[in-house]
Image 1: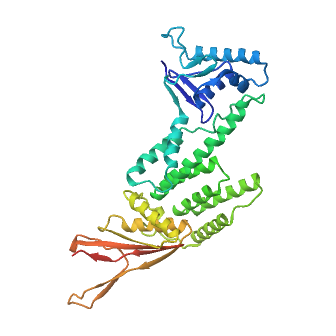
Image 2 (image 1 turned 60 degrees about the horizontal axis):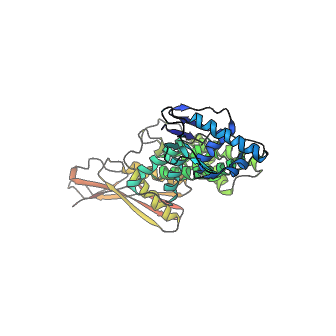
Image 3 (image 1 turned 90 degrees about the vertical axis):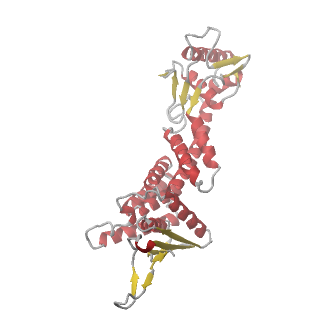
Length: 398
């Protein structure tokens, strides 16, 4: 029995045994698509009215018989007996696809991902993060456009109203997948994948202010205020054209913040750019191996935003990326609209006998093996404010 594969998220595609099918009767294709998406058994008289609403009852019955015959020819198996109709089952006045026949439907993959994502209103656990991201990314990759894009029957057929209802339903499910996936990616410090996911969300729904704001914030966290302003300009134009309204005050404030950052960059004194002088998001090396720690910081940030002040101590051997992690988080927090306060810690070094005690400030100390030093820094979070010791002092292990 050959595999029947149907892709309905976009212009419909039907494959049988690896070959793409073409349909001499458009309503025969509509019948197959409806049976595959809805599942279950359907009364013939209801299918008559669903696909041929303007026909006389006897004409609609004859048209349905012709459509069924066409489907059976297209889905026939040369090795099967003539009495065994592959995929299309008829039982008295009922019609369905054979539930035991091999069928693949892109909706099934998307529905499974949507159910898994819908269960989570918070960040997934570390052990489930990679599997969930992969599942949702695979589902999103199957979406080529709206449900049955460009396919309709006309004649005021109820099929067209069903198609529109399905389009709205799957649009909402896809938006949730894009929302959750971008949130998980952003929380893990995966800014470039998050930017791509948000860009697809905005392309799918250009009037979605929340998606546009998040894309603007991601652009700011990546040090690209110009890109944030481009997103705002596009949103502003779409809202004016479609709804004759302006962006919300929150979005306007974010745009003003982006303009201020862009103006500050243009007026800054030109100097050679080194790894030390680049903004954190412009460093060449990606933030590797720190997604779990970054996700933890984002979780604490959300708690602080909910009115629960937080304090986080970042510790580890010198050179493992603590400063980079804190800097990326501070840049991300600033892009969320938080007020960022920076401080410096100082360590009083003991006298050596050759001079007075010296105060050492400004920077993580290298050479951790000497004396077994472990550097540590603090990040304090309160509602609307992020404080960081950007160049923490070193502490000693006993």
